[in-house]
Length: 56
Image (cartoon, rainbow, N blue to C red):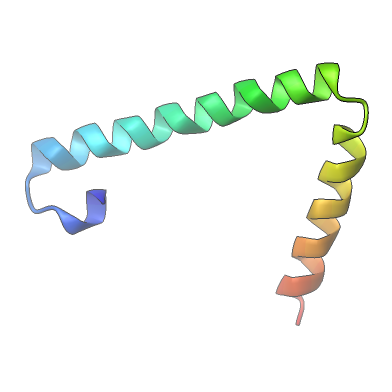
């Protein structure tokens, strides 16, 4: 959305919101790693799938 607007103020706010959402993802991921023993394995498998797809 930030790239669609010509208003620099709106763009600044939207980019800031996007950055905050990255932090929220990190918070959720930290909780999953602490409380879900399967999460670490799933992260590894997901990373392998991405690498496989990108190497095609």
